[in-house]
Image (cartoon, rainbow over all chains, first blue to last red; front, side):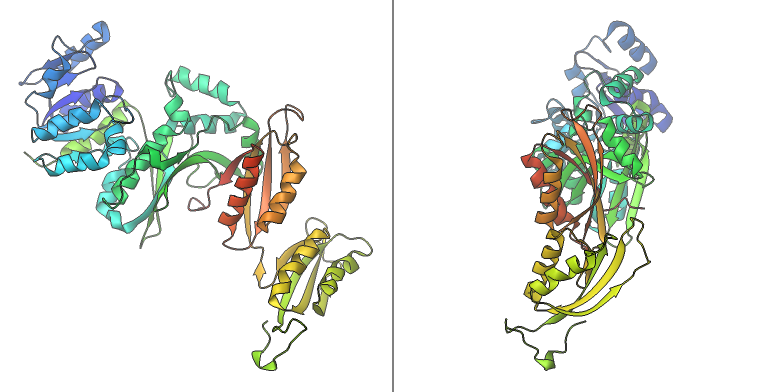
Amino acid sequence: MKLAVLGAGAVGRSVAELAGQYGHEVVAIADSSSGVVDSSGIDVDAVLNRKEREGTVGDGSPDDVLVADYDVLVEATPTTLGDAQPGFGHVETALSRDRHAVLANKGPVAERYGELMALAEDSAGDVLFEAAVGGAIPILSTIDDFGAGQITAARGVLNGTANFILSRMAADGLDYEHVLAEAQDLGVAEADPSFDVDGTDAALKFVILSNVLSQGEREYTLDDATVEGIQNVPGNALDLAAEDNRTVRLIGEATPDGVHVAPKLVPQNGVLAVTGTRNIVQFETENAGELNISGRGAGGPETATAVLADVGRLPPL
Amino acid sequence: MTDDADEEAETDGGQHVQAYTVRLELVDEPGELLNALQPISEHGANLLSIFHERGNVTPRGHIPVEVDIECPPDRFENIVQALRDAGINVIQAGAERYSEELTVILVGHLIDTDLSDSLTQFQTTSRAEVVDVSLSAPEGTEGVSSARLRLATEADRAEEVLETVRDIAEEKDIHVIEPQLAGGSA
């Protein structure tokens, strides 16, 4: 497949770097201000070196990339809320040109799911978004395999930054501010970690899960979710929890009752008490009890594997 | 445990009476058993039997007592409530044991907002027993403190109890870290 990669952050760069391993070719790359197109295949190393040195991927504009001759548009620009632009527009362009779109960007799938599905319906291209939920963990493909109708609820930990902070606080008796600063030094938390610590990022993922699980019966957006972050969890609350063999995790739930994200008490050795940046999703199934999948929920190469697995699922155009 | 309906046993309320078992834990002090029996007779229940397990002490040093009584169903709640109001630890009432335990953590100005009043409200409003409280107040009485509460309640009432706790806490601007009830127990 010929890929056009929009977004040259950690995920976009990793997709471009790993595409060859998966037998695909990158024909265009764009960041927020520049673009490069080469129908015979881009020299990815050269483009990423230039990005590193000069801050741009090429001399063209990002719009050149949108109209390039690709099979699959990879949308890996930063997640935006509300109208989910410019990501939504990028996907709209690809679908209107009867091309496939693969998203790592959560915005369009969480905020405008119905419109997105309608666009895909009218297009010869498909939309897939495994990378938008839980990085490398095959969550949406598991739902697809299992059948959305067979799954009654999903819950779990889908934000590695918040989980890292809570597990560090619990393990070393440190306070929130201290661990957050450390997470930023380690690159686990971004300079602006608000989406991670206030629960928004986890909520977007559970909104997407609700959209997929409800199979068009009901559409969810972030506004439908109740969201509480971890900023108000003090170290001594974690100490008290530990004395009782419990701990606190930022747990999200997608059930027929709606989408909820909040810090919750869980058994210290329970399946939901993953440590560090690890993520876990637990499905409640109709006939097979609980099903747990765990793994790395973020990171460039990790998320890129989900993007490229989606690309591999797409039919030839 | 239910009376045979054919017997048509009636009291002044004109209702069928039913037999109930109440399990109590008493402090090992003189007069405690009498204290526990008084609310039962005062609320018009018949005392059927008392099984006083003296010598068998609970981990908390209390003495378990099992009381069988007979009364119309609508009075039973009042009796349990009266026992609680008299400071008696009711472990099991009726057919339903307080089988479910849930743990919550409260975070906020717990001492300034009168923690013991909060606990009393939880018990009286939600039909849950506060079994255990552990407080951590590193900044003294005026700072933000945390408390871990263990609540015992009847089976399947956990969600209801949590709702009450949430409401009472909200009025006092206390943050509640709730237990994850569904899943994740393994």
